Length: 68
Image 1 (cartoon, rainbow, N blue to C red):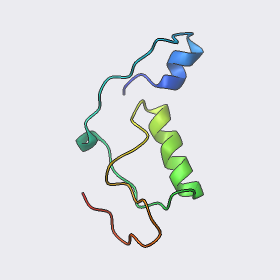
Image 2: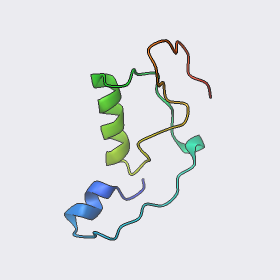
Image 3: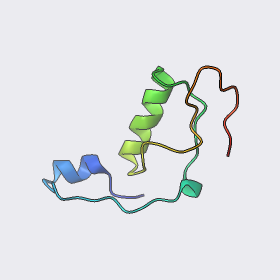
């Protein structure tokens, strides 16, 4: 697991820069933006030191499937 920004802040490391993470190493989500499911996924990613955004995350209501 990568060191999370939350852990760095708690430790007072204000100059923290996370390691680059390949999108192949974490899953995209089909959760609609603004839903509890999407917010929960963003929180999980933050806790695990992952980027918040994945290029294949669902972005619109009309987007019925996400592309990988």
